[in-house]
Amino acid sequence: MEVTQAVFAGSSTRVEQRPKRKLPEFAFIGRSNVGKSSLINMLTGVKGLAKTSSTPGKTRLVNHFLINESWYLVDLPGYGYAKLSNTSRKELEDTINDYLDNSDELVLLFVLIDSRHDIQQNDLDFIATLGEDGIPFSIIYTKCDKRGPNVLKEQMERNAAKLLEQWEELPPVFATSSQNFSGREEVLNYIESILKSL
Ligand code: GTP
Ligand code: MG
Image 1: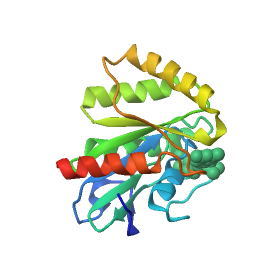
Image 2: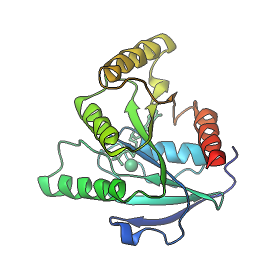
Image 3: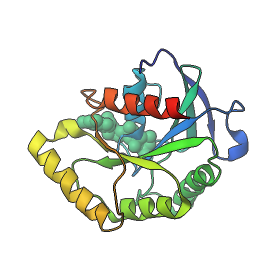
């Protein structure tokens, strides 16, 4: 799929503030600093569309980006950033939960996992809640430029084994890098195939 147009369509913390125009949504979630906002810039090809930072906790709001006038990419705040105050952490959790609890337009949630580390307990816990809530998801490994192909493959296999302790089968998995654009076509084509099936 070609991204011919990508425009910021609004920020929100609550469902009533979301863009009025209802269209299919594909959202990105994962631990703080995993690379959600960078991935949105990489997929759209628009540098700086979503704000990124080397400091965790950058994205505080739900940000909608209108793609090709027909669907949204949604950038969510991260979970699991230990250094935030309790109040800030609770605010981010409320924002994430309000999005997920009121997700009629959400077609698929991409859960981002850092390819450099073992999948963390908070990722496993978060993914378990998706099963309970019946939210369809897919997994995207980020920062794959930081790993050689063999190490990356082993890491992904280790994580898959961990997830299979909890799940009977795994959803589609993608390896990406926002730095060298790897995985871009795969993710966009996957989104396109789902949009066509709606
Ligand atoms: P929060 O909004 O704080 O939850 O973070 P986020 O998940 O949106 O992460 P963000 O995109 O802001 O990126 C965090 C840091 O990781 C930045 O310093 C990025 O430059 C870096 N980063 C993101 N993706 C990649 C990647 O694919 N490769 C490399 N090498 N660095 C990346
Ligand atoms: Mg972000």
